[in-house]
Image 1 (cartoon, rainbow, N blue to C red):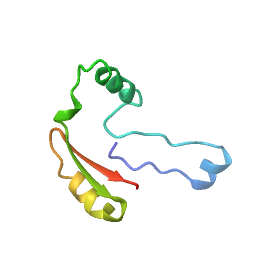
Image 2 (image 1 turned 135 degrees about the vertical axis):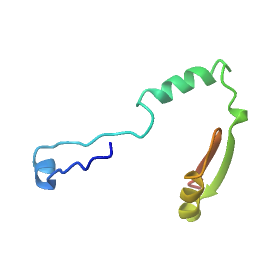
Image 3 (image 1 turned 180 degrees about the horizontal axis):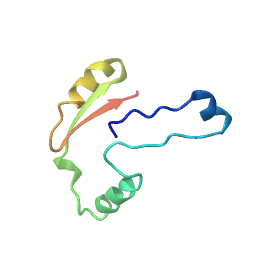
Image 4 (image 1 turned 30 degrees about the horizontal axis):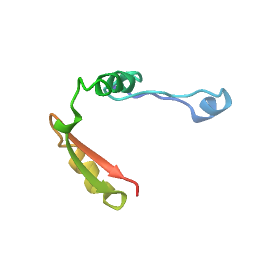
Length: 78
C-alpha cells in the first residue's frame, strides 16, 4: 500500500484497534516453508546466509536492502 493511512491515535487506543500488516508474504508462508524443508524438498544449504551482530544493525539493514535471489541477512542477537 503506497497511500497514507491516517489513523487517529486516540481512536486506535480507545477502541482497542490493531493495525496488522505484512510485507511480501502472507502469515502462513512460514508453515508452508517448514513443510518443504522437513521432507528435504527444499535445500536451505543453497541460501547465501550472512550473519551480523546486533551492534552492526544499521549495516545489516543496508546489506539486506541490496539482497537478491537466495541472499539472506540474519541479525544474531547473541
